[in-house]
Length: 309
Image 1 (cartoon, rainbow, N blue to C red):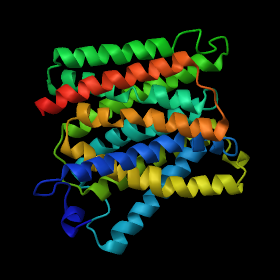
Image 2: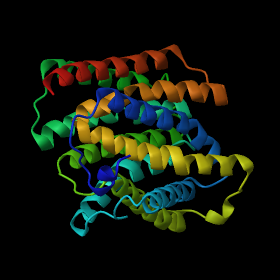
Image 3: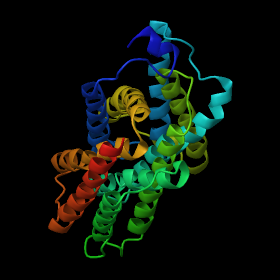
């Protein structure tokens, strides 16, 4: 990373498409493979407590990187901090916290499939808040993806008789909607802070929210610091939190929320495969069909939006 990038949020010159693709791939792999790990982690630590440690540990990693590399100020300018706190809570605190709690009652593979309806909500908020018009192809893509979501939520697929399933599904959908809104709010403002400062502030604000919630709703002393938990925490500090959030900010800076969000549509496949390997989860044919519809819808939106961007 250049010193120039450490000093400000925008860089001059052309940002190679291959670099954008590499950053997106980093996010996809980091977040996709992490959902099964989160399900393992909540066996040893309450979910909100884990989310607090994950966020604050990631913040420490980013702070050390900024200080060690002398990459500019730690925190964003004062006038940006409230805005960024809102974006961070919507894009990361909601997703990390609600998804982790939901996995107490939902399989990891199904959780990640619902979470990655996020781009659909980003496209809708993009239209409502930023005034971008949806083309017929985009409307078709959203309709196809929503059909996949409805198929996925069919009572024949999920055991709705289990009281935890409706609640878990509602939590994950709330996280997905919040993420879409946060992505559009991020794009609506010209940030002065460097990408690393942005990452640090989002992790700090999310961490504070999780600490408060964990102290009110959980007993952090119930945690069991097993070898698996410690390794998963260390992984989360560095890759899914610090590295992936920084990379995602870079991607979102270079394209509209609709396009950036659609790039993540392959993440469920990564999560589902990783979950199947770790937990031996069976994937019913209807579930596979619903996931395929969600991906096809995302591709339709991406293709059309790419031509218009």
